[in-house]
Length: 161
Image (cartoon, rainbow, N blue to C red; front, side, top):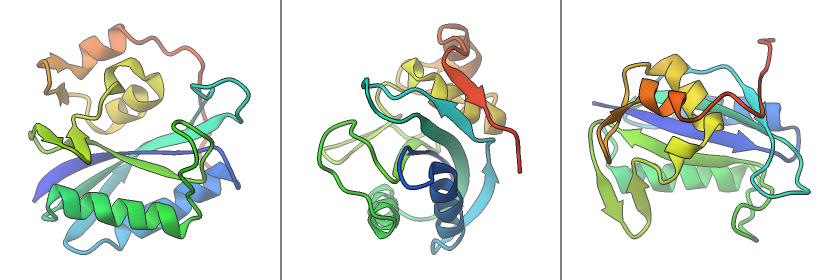
C-alpha cells in the first residue's frame, strides 16, 4: 500500500456536488481505501473569464500501479462529463495525482510530484490538512516551506455542510 494524494477541482455543473461524487467514486476504487478528504476551497481560475473553482485533496491508500490509477481517475472524470477541449479550460471534474508515496514519476502521461503544485495555493492548503509533513520530492522542500512561499491569497475555505 502506498499513500497517494489526489487533487480535485471543478468549476462547472455544481462544482461541490462534482467533488462529492468524485469522493464517492474514489472510495469505490479497487485495491484502494479512501483515508481522508480535505475541506473544500474556492479559488479563481488560472484563466480570466471562467467561473471560480471548487478544490479539495483526497488521500488514498492503494496498491494500484501509477498508470492504472491514472486510468481509473480519468474514467471517473469522463463519467462525470469531463471534456478536454482546451488546456486549463472549464471542467466538470479534474483529478490529479499530486504525490504517490515517495515516488518520482516521469512518464509521458504522468509526472509526480504534480508539476506546478508548489505554486498553487488551491493545492497546497488542502494538502496541508491531510499531510502537514509531506515533502515535495522533486527538490526536497517540505510543505511548510512551500506554504510560506505561496500565501493564502484568492482562496476561500468553504464551511462544511
